[in-house]
Image (tube, rainbow, N blue to C red; front, side, top):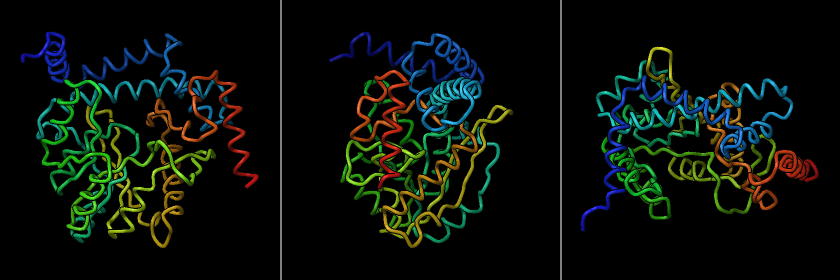
Length: 315
């Protein structure tokens, strides 16, 4: 059976869009950010402003408003950059990485052959990093299908072309990652996503939230190396890749203690460069008393957040 016209159109549009120059897509990201920000009614604007108010309650209002625009601009630009990265070949993407800070940390970890967990928060333009890491190590990465079929095919093909092995986000995927790490391979974990449920909670910007302990468990079971990695666009039309050693986060700790320490590490990075974090992500509803948080007016949502913060103090 042939694909319906809408499916063919989606495929053609995605391919055309991904072939635009990086500078053009960055320009489109800038325009899109202004449209979204000045609309004032977009859900993404509400979510970003609420998240910033939660994370930085003592920041002056005008400073936080300026930060909201910067965050919208950087996030919109990052998503436009993703399309260019997905559509470009391996060699072109490698050329876009201009500087690598902490490069020797990565080489040292590779030489040990103990496996490696790359901890990558929703920060900057993370898709550009796959090309460089896959050049040096065998990658096994969890992949959650995109809802739109044509876009899913496009993204899946792009992520797997660098010899990366994609596994599902379930128990089978975790088993494959454990096997890869024990064989000296590498995986990538997004540590700041929100599990659907959990037992214990981890404070994140002072709010107790269900949090994934996958990074801690993988590292502690396999003794793999752990590196915090992120990529930021630079003024020269490319990206700078940053690598930090975070072995101290997991050493001599339980999984709960390590998860807490990891979230403190993420907070530190975000406070250093808050404009590059993807603040549209609905991270702060991962608590039984915060369900539907992003559907509430900001004032009411912040009252619920404060009640959850007080529960930590009382405990």
